[in-house]
Length: 89
Image (cartoon, rainbow, N blue to C red):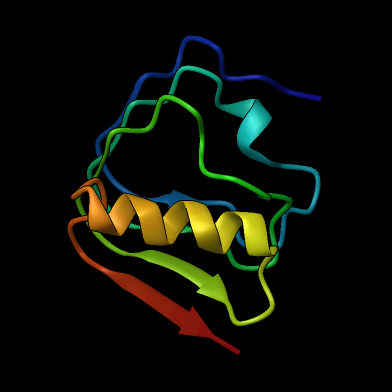
């Protein structure tokens, strides 16, 4: 499994759609995503622990893991996600 342990800041989108082997543990030190986080059909079950800013939207499926949906809702409430949430089929 690949870990991006030195990746702290993404200046655009994080697009892991369709990559079931990629999840939040691959990004243990990610703080900032300036664009969208596209997590559709990925292995994400939570948001990365250190994430504190998403400049765009978080895009997930309706049937995403409940733990991920809860993390996203909380991140919207505290202002981490600036662009809102988009659910796709």
